[in-house]
Structures are given as C-alpha cells and as structure tokens.
Image (cartoon, rainbow, N blue to C red):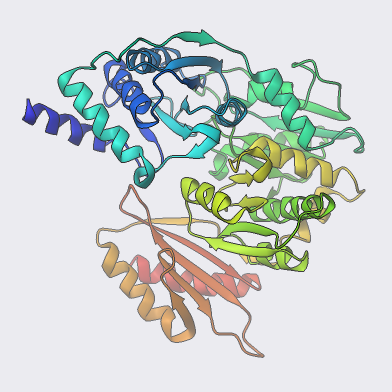
Length: 477
C-alpha cells in the first residue's frame, strides 16, 4: 500500500501547481481523483458541518467533476453549495458573501483537453502550495491509495444561483449610469464571459439598462473553444476583436479569458491598451474613492515588479504608497490582506480589489475603465496614451536547457550597465544619467516549464529594443 501511496503522490505532483490544480482530462484528472480532492479540501479547511461553495466553467468535464468533488466533500461531512456555471470571480463573490471556502472547476485559458481546480478559503482567501495546497495534495494522495473514510456524518448538497447577486454587487461598486453612451465589442472566447457580461453590463440579471451597447462575439458557452483559445494574452487571440472594433466603429473592445477573471482592452483603432495602463487608471479611482470615504492613514496600492513604471508613478502622484510584489496570484492576495491595500494590479491583467475581499476580478476592472473613460470625451487611444508613456517589450519566453547558465550570460551582459536585484528572478535597472534614458529588464524562470521569461521597459522604443536584443542574444546564445 505504501508504494501505491507514493505512486499517487507522484501523479498528483504533475497536476498540483503553485496556485491551483491543472491537468489533462481522463489522463491526469479523473472523477475518482477529483473526489479525493474534494475530501482532502474539506479536511484542510475543516469544513465538517460547514458550507463549501463549488462552481464550474463550461468545459465538457466540469459538471461531472463538480459533482465528484461534492461527493468527496460531503463524505467528509461538508455541506456543499453548488452554484453551477459561473466565472472564477463569481466563486470569489460567493466565498466572500457566504464566508465559505470555495472550489472552482476551470483550466482558465488552457486548451479544451485540460481542466483544473482553483481553491479559496472562506472570504475568498487564496490557497497556494505554501498555504495549504501541498497539504490538500498529500491528503488526496492518501485517499486515492486507501479510500475515503466517512466522516462522523455525511454532508448535504444544495444548489444556489448567485449570478444576479454577483451582478448587483458589482454594480454597487461602480456607478455606470451617468457615463456617455458607449459601443463596446466584447469577445468572450466561448468562455464564461458569455454568461457574466449580459448579467453585469446588460439586463440579463434584471438590473437597469446602462448607456452601453454591447456587441457580442463568441458568447455561446463552449468548452471546446471553436473560434480561438480563450487566452487574450496571446496576440493571435485578439485579432477577431480588433477587426470587429474597427469594423463597427466601436469605442473600445474587451476580451475575457476562459473563466472570465481576466479582462484585456483594445482601443477604437484595435490597438491593445496595456494591463499596466488599466492598472494605473483603476488605481487612481480606488485611491480617490478611499479618500472620499474618509480613509485614515496611508493608502497602499500593490503592483508586481513587471508592471510599467507608470503604475508606481501614478500611485505616488495621487498621494498613495506603491507596494512592489513578486509575480503570483495567491502571493498578491496575501499582500492585499497584509497591507490593507485598496487595489492591486498585475501585468497579466489580474486586478485585485479590497472591496472584493482582496480577490481579483477582471469584470470589475473593466467597469472602472468604462466609468472613467465614459466621463470624458477623448477617444480611448488618446485617453490611454497618458498611461502608456514608455515602451514595453511584452513578455518574451525562451526555451533553455540550462536556466542557470542562461541567467549568468544575461547578468554578464547587463550588470556592467545596471543595478541588479534578485527580488523575483533577476531585475536589472539601468544606471541613468543626463544622457542615459531609463530602462529596466526582468528575467524570471517559469515555475512549471524550462522557460525564461523576459520583460523590458524603456523610456523610448530605441532604448527598450537595445536592451531587449542584448538580453535575448545572451539568453539564446
């Protein structure tokens, strides 16, 4: 039995990532494995006699996986509240509003063959390998090897639709009723945005109409992703949206990923608005809102180290304190709680809100952008240009066989002209003088693949490209 336990532990190590569970359906993830995860989660969050929220996306395997998870959790005594089809941030809403742990079945932007689980403690608190996910993995391995023992009493399963409450809550946080009329193309990528956008920005949940005309693209829920992958971080997946915005003369376009917790923006020309620009715009609004509410003491706003320099500059100019963090979902949630920050923004288009239990919500970020943009008369290209004054490379991934050697080569090239820190990977900040424009360069290894991730920003395009090319040549030598 011990060897079987070890085998199951090794298997689960292939699907348990830093912040979630993710793997191939039918190969790495099966209903018995999911049932074991349900039992393990119930034990980790001590949910016997307490509620656990379970939601799922539109992937074909998700409903059955949610049911298997519920079976495991109820066997250990948890009372499961099934909220059905939902976005990931809907499960955060339910976890916060009900003060209950939650599990969301989704593989986010991954292709159709994948599925996974995102876990939260009560109040939408994140769970990572360091804060409970490793323990869940080990318990699940034991249950797979030895079976799931029944708890003192079996839990119950109930169903609850939280979409209308979720939509109403977001509307209570951002008033869009007074903005100028806007035409907005939304590409849901056949993901959960097809359910949440009509509820939050339209009238599907029974809320009053807004001065926003939504032009839908790929709103049909389809976990096989027949049109394109629901990963707007890849430029090829934005092309349909970009063309449609120009074709219909829209004011802007929004693209959501598969579980609709991230939102990407394009302007009226179809040009991307960087997530850093969105973070700066939302940060200003949240700082102003905190001040208007009589916030006492320092106001903190979190940004990770590879957001644009404009983000901390904007935060400081507004009289708040920027807090730089490492890249990482659960880590930023922890920092939101530790600092009491009103807002947090990542380069990857994750946006975190104090008024949303410190959790991330792409829809809420989109609403803030629409509210601010809709209160003035500029085009989005002109408006957003104020928050994109510098030149950025975007994330460039390189497959390398020897990560340490590649990092050493970059260091040898850039250290003579930069200050270096190892806060999160290698960060080089150019030494600037009267005739030297600013730049920074981040080189970080992937947590899960033999990749080095390169991000560069410069005061101008020539500076950015010079540093980018020096770093890439060293990495790929």
